[in-house]
Length: 361
Image 1 (tube, rainbow, N blue to C red):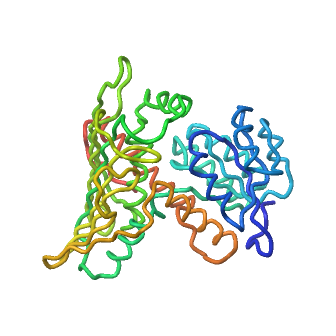
Image 2 (cartoon, helix red, strand yellow):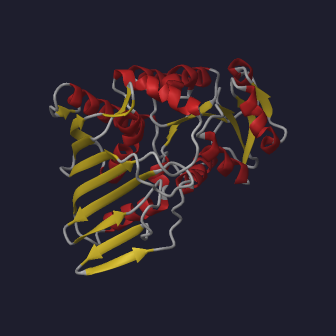
């Protein structure tokens, strides 16, 4: 059985499966949190285990998933493996009697997603997807402003992503290999993997999506390999609000970033003005991370935490609150993540079928 919740009067014990690229963003907030203890880690690559061994202290380190899942005193397993493995690895974690956290997207297919939700229900386990953008402080503040009614009713949402090949950290080749494999059946890096963020934010802002249309092109970046851009998704929420996402590839543009290098904008237009988040992953233009326009005046926010790791830090704190019983809201639970996946796949199918509007049940 999974650990009884809430967990109080002791640290929350986390086991980590997968120590690839995303671990560099996921693990430091755990190590810095006084209420979290990493008790075990698993990766098939022994060199990755060695890279983290000094930071993990007395944590058990293994290349065997079976060995990790048999360990006692694990409260939650954070699975950091490639998306195509989420279904199989996640179900094994849940059936072994552990709570589960996954990276986004929740799964590669709706079938795998439903397997995960069924296993969580059958085993009485918490299933949460880490979506760092909904914890990114400028986006949190943007949502608060829109919901306050200060600018009147929201009437539109526009999102923009410009991806590039310059700036940011060095990404391990293995982090790209499985991504490139996914492109063969239309699950590209920029739409399937990255646009998940934007659809997750949109549903967090305005609730479920009713219909969506996708128009996805491709750009060859090296012989034999193309990225899924330019791309446009447009959708309507059940509340009637419409939204657009434009994805562009500008391979020679430099974006300053400590992590991933892409320029991202999120703007909500309201009846009396608008509020815009000017960056998330990178900081090309040195603008305030959040700006409000109302009645001829602009108000800027310069002191919000807006580094590329800020959402991961805040998400870790939310996970602690959930497991401590300090909040009943699980942001991006299994059902919420399923809806994002359904909308995303519908957008991909729309483009593949000739840019036809898809209605979600």
